[in-house]
Image (cartoon, rainbow, N blue to C red; front, side, top):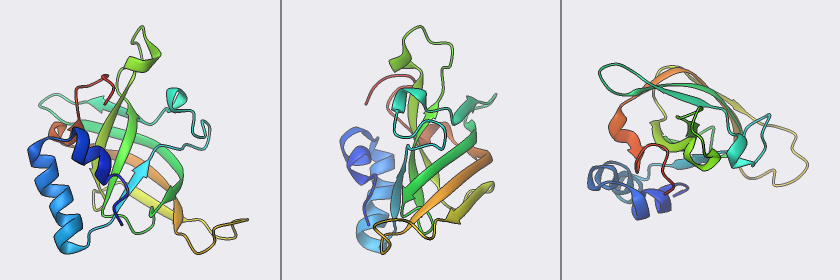
Length: 145
């Protein structure tokens, strides 16, 4: 399952392509796109999952995503995060960061009893103080990809 692979292919660094796309093609790794949130739905300008830059590099990520396809089984999440909450332009507030699925602090809750698309895996994902290296950001911070 290649959810998120297109964004990495189009806008990722060569290192990101090597790490993630190669693992999808050669090892059968599974990706997910984590955008939708419990309080924002798919309104991307209202996404509030925060990625706070840390001294020495990297981000500390906290927040929740909802109805994430492959969320319960993903090896990585291509995740929309709030990185610049005070930016003057709403479109400069967010960045996309790839979060490895085995990172400490990720909680997954498979969603059961959906009205439709029952055969498709969806989950709620909680990021609790998940540290991600800065090189996992796709594109420049606060810039559209």
